[in-house]
Length: 74
Figure 1: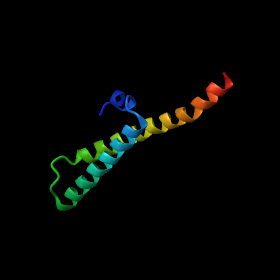
Figure 2: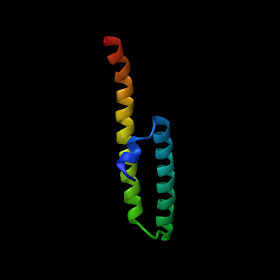
Figure 3: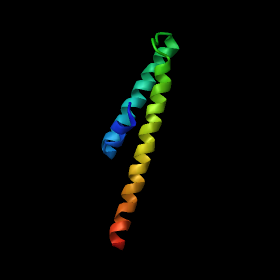
């Protein structure tokens, strides 16, 4: 997943994407326990994608909190 794609998403889309990624990583972990994972590196990639989504989401939430303050001062 490209960081530019993530940055273009809204907060609601980011939360939905995080939930999807967490569900996928859960499924892969279950498959790993039973020994049926084709690409074990996919788990690492999903963890990194979740971190990217959370980083962008945190920035957007902080930016949304500061936006009313900036307009009030102007």
